[in-house]
Image 1 (cartoon, one colour):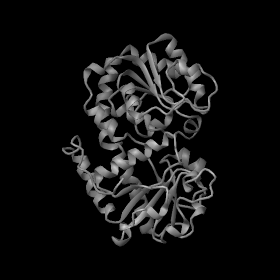
Image 2 (spheres, rainbow, N blue to C red):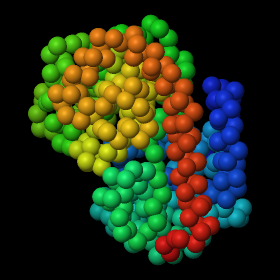
Image 3 (tube, rainbow, N blue to C red):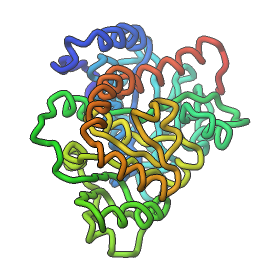
Amino acid sequence: MSGTPETVPGFLAAEAFFHELRATAQSLARRYVVFLVDHARSSRSTHKFWWNHFEEACQALAIPCWRVPRASEAWPQAHRREGRRGVYLFFTTESLFHDRSRRFRAVRDDTLRPEDVVASWDPNVVPAFTRCHRFLIGFRNEGWLSTYGAGHAAPIVFWDPFAPLTAVQRGMMGTSDEQGAWDFAYFGTLNPHNYDQFERILRPLAARHHCRFGGKLWRVASPVPLWYGFSPFLVGEPRGLEILARGRVNLALHNDYHRKTRTLTERIFISTALGRPIVCDNAGARQYFTPAEVPVGEDPETFLALCEDVLRDVRAHQEIARALQKKVWRQFSYLNTVVQLLTDIDTTLSSGRVTS
């Protein structure tokens, strides 16, 4: 995708917070251009949605952003003439190669200039580049910092997986006829890292209530989740938004490592952007939400009890959810994710605390 700015989405044009963010973004756009490096040759990872969300927000903020093609020789070079730094974002070491045999680098070390930036969640990406500034991407959370970030040689910048603009827009345009299609709704990848929550939470709820579950089933041999609505294939986000927009109560379930470090996936921000009441299994929600806004049950018994409690008085919780929706629009969208990440990089480079 070209870095040419698109027209500002109509639902943001009148929002004061958006114009404040865009003023900051204009300064960043004069100094940086972002390259989103594909996760793999034909990625079916849900992480590719993060790239979509980041790119969408960059467009709204008029920050140049490009999806990297397979051959590095074909990459746009205009930013070099314009004096901008390139910021190259990677998921894992798979992103370094454009072939499955890992023989051909998609991003050669000598392609980048000393002033350019590489950032990744995978610490193994950092040593693959020696000519530029290098960063580790992490979560703005003490649990993650103490578990994965402590003592790392590269400086850390933060990626907050907030609500994508598509969810914000859907929430702004939500109608009353979407209310109450299902008692409980869940959308997300089901894998060995969160299958315990399927057995201990999703199945018991489905036995007692009208539930709608959806998402990709990944590396789980049992066919049982398929009977509950999961798919062996990656499920598109429009379908996920449809499921979450029509749940009376939405469920935010996390992988075991997210629960351990108390870091959040963006599903919780999607549901709150849609204006739906939500119950969460991760105390990391306390970093962003009050107990009234997002009830948290870290063990299955508490979680299920909270589900019953919210459903008994769902009207009151809908009022809370509608108020919370405005908070999420203004503070926890991918507009904030983009500005915060690039500001972290810019501040660190300005201070001289970099790995190069």
